[in-house]
Image 1 (cartoon, one colour):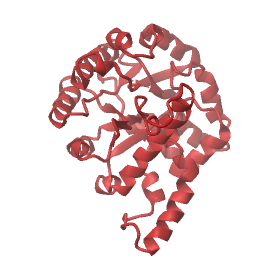
Image 2 (cartoon, one colour):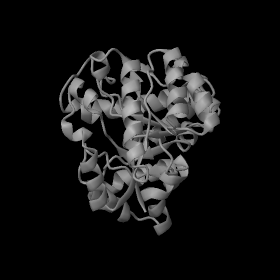
Image 3 (cartoon, helix red, strand yellow):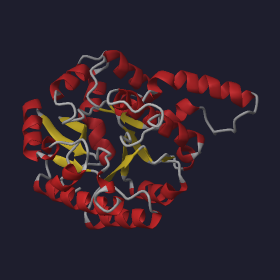
Image 4 (cartoon, one colour):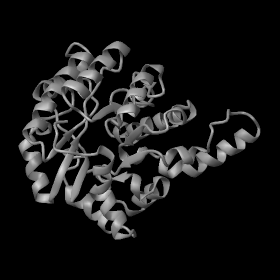
Length: 308
């Protein structure tokens, strides 16, 4: 069974007010047909961060519209789709109100967050009550790169360099701040899934550990309770349509096969079979490949055919 941990869908209202997305991002029938062709049993829909809230009355208004529409779509195809709700993360009271509506009234068991908003990352105090409740309820947090003003955008705003480099470094700095702030230490059972391998973390993990040990030995940085690599192994990451064997194996080395989820990044990446073949061709056991292609997804989400 193949389960896709990274797909996107947007309602018409948001597509019309966002600067990038075409009607193809709202075509759920085409998405289901693509799943059928690739023999994908289920897909998780996560939110691609965008600027629609600047034209639609703010994040709270967008969250309500998106969550209502997504719940309707998932309810229509409960055996094929799983949804991750979004939250208005610029207002602590509104954030928790929508969290309770989304997980209570609408039945979502996953939440989609951006890596940052206007330079505020997921280590901010505004998230701490959410983390306590998400950990207590076993709700999974799927983290997507911030696409609006990611790190570095104030210095280099380029239509190619921004999505290729700045998106993934916004993810990387987000994870780094979760480690250095103590969030991953204080909330050890919180389930984070980072898109796109967790940025460049698989490639700098060894440096993160060695520099921490050196600086800690000179008492330049505080005691984190463990080396950064130990916290990284608590995270889950998705593959986001990547087909590089070397990148995939580096990621497996960082978090272990049990914490890697295959994701296509559809419709941003429409070639679903290519990213599946990349997993099947890895030098891993059949059990590890099966875990990445779907079993980890089911275990992490405790998936059922209930709405959300």
